[in-house]
Image 1: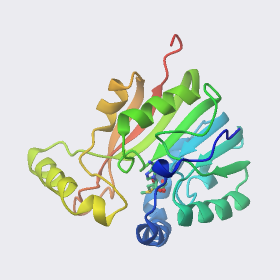
Image 2: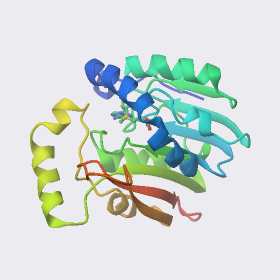
Image 3: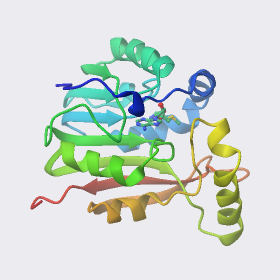
Image 4: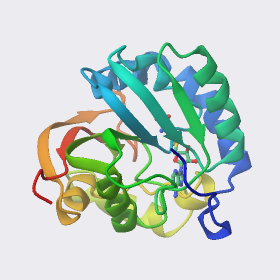
Length: 221
Ligand SMILES: C[S@@+](CC[C@H](N)C(=O)[O-])C[C@H]1O[C@@H](n2cnc3c(N)ncnc32)[C@H](O)[C@@H]1O
């Protein structure tokens, strides 16, 4: 299925963040794992997962999934994703590439998956246009993303972080992005989605404001 190697411009290189994320994310699985399960419940057919990281979603794909093409641009995380793919119950092909230029054919997938990725891509409209391109008409996008807080105080803090240290420290992560607005602007039809706090209890972090749900590429597209 992969059709091209990622260009130099598409390369993502955050080795320090990647190593830290690999450790932190495994430790956070007791809290994040239930959201991954909900994200992938009922998924079937051919799936593309973009920004697969170290492959923590792979264990949650239902057996009705025929194949997952897992795109990951960061070399350290991609190597860990390859190991996770070997342990997966469903076939997973880990492929280098970036969301803004997916190295796959158009309309080739029934389902696309993004989790905690749209915060980090360089160009959200372009990444969403690519996701729409590779989904078949009527295909489904499952998303679990953190983003903009509802209240003005936290939103102001999030914007300040996005302009300063946060993207530098956390692999180009931004905390004030509006996933639902971006999906609508990209022409997706919003399916059921809900806002969740992560962690559900305790202090609110700039990354606590998550959205989990489904959007569709319109059938007549
Ligand atoms: C916070 S991690 C999330 C990883 C994984 N999706 C998960 O749920 O644990 C962000 C991921 O986005 C990836 N990423 C960053 N920029 C990207 C881009 N332009 N295209 C695709 N993936 C990207 C990173 O390499 C990393 O794997």
